[in-house]
Image (cartoon, rainbow, N blue to C red; front, side):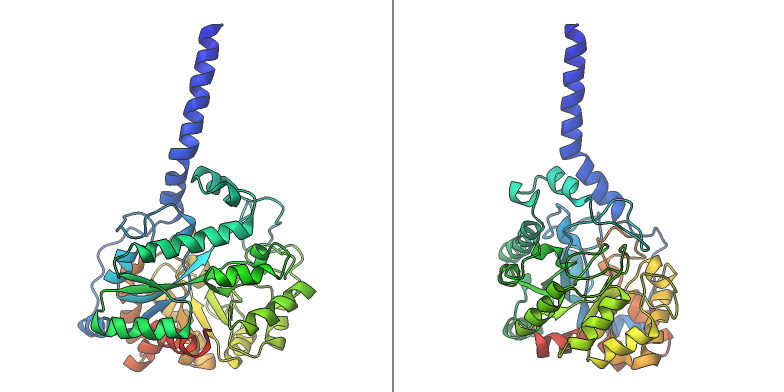
Length: 386
């Protein structure tokens, strides 16, 4: 009998060790892969132009994973050395706080959560185990610590002045990069508008009303009811505008998009999406929605993964960009990779030259490429950050 107990205890210990030391790494490696392809050979024009671009990406979820972003990794899509190698000047780090099991783009309930398992397995602070707001603050603090330990290679942007100071530094040293913070879904408010101050003080400057499920702020494009803004949601939009926070309509239901566009006085963004004109599904924007977002002066970040663009290469990405350009103009297009967001990508952040090259092949001018690859985001942040 004693040997049975010993075996069971050993199995229990092995299971616990596996949960804490094997499961997180397995998830990180398998959730954020890159297509295995032959090395890409860009045109010489693309090589020369790419060196001169200010590149900005509106979405990545790298803070969800326990990787040291100061070290170059072969896992995932983004870290600070690879951002610098890819000539990325500004990366939005977007916070994931809750994801329902059985994730899909059509219908998700918000009752259960997979992120809790990952939070516990990655040994995050106990306060984050049951609090979505605490998860947001913790990820914000992670990014700030990376900046503090980066020896001047990485900066966190919170204001227009921060951005201006960073641009001056980068003019003399292009081998640096920067990030700013966003949040996927206002469930991080935990139902209390007063928590917006804590999130703002933590550095969050962009937030979406919803992620993959309906919450007490608004309906999601992938939720059950897919409704619009609630009273709390309307209060949140007003308070975000007062603080000059950027409203992100990624994952928002059609009714939420309509409700937000009817009340905002400042530009909105869609940090990562596709368009139904080239890839018709529940995840992507209609032409009417694109026009409405552009009418605010906003920008639309085109994603790279297959559900967004119905393809697995830069050509599909640029096809979606062309659709937006023809509809509302190149001044409303941006990059919205969804790197490290649990999707298969055609390249990591070192491979963005493929988009530069494909934009040129598609007939976009060099000035158009500059705006699409980051100039539009730079303009918006320069004018609308606090």
